[in-house]
Image 1: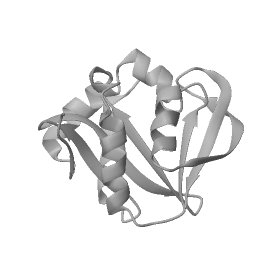
Image 2: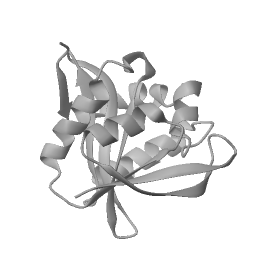
Image 3: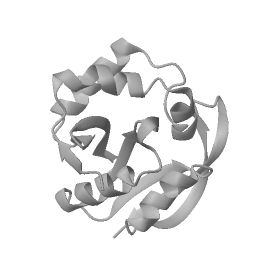
Image 4: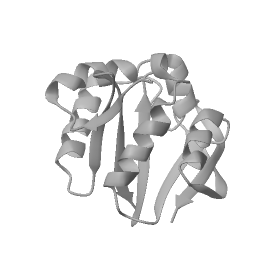
Amino acid sequence: MAEVALRLVEDADLDALFDQRGDPESIRMAAFTTSDPDREAFDAHMAETRNSPDVTLRAVTCDGRLVGSIASFVMEGDTEITYWIDRSAWGRGIASRALALFLDTVATRPLYARAASDNHGSLRVLRRAGFTVIGTEISYAPARGTEIEETILRLV
């Protein structure tokens, strides 16, 4: 079984993390991200994220290779999580293992997550980690250029 680990995001990770966010299928599944990643905006966002006391950001590695990132952040008073796993690593349990490791380091509860309702893989990862669906809403998904249903989950 592959070894999944979390570590701090390093400057040397930024090129790979940006490249991962350029995959069209990943963008479509994430839905609530930009459809056309801009490096300058990405770098500004990462600088802010990495320096925010309200954000816990970690790089996800598999057998020592960077395969994504995972983070918690505060949005309108609620702590939410987000993750991005490189498409080449999908379907191998890496997101599930990374989320389990992350939940061991982030003690805040309740913790919330959101995913496009048709992103069955991500919803499965979240449910396996103990998140339960608490509702849905229709939201504009920039990556798809339209409104779609978003599933809202909570871990208590």
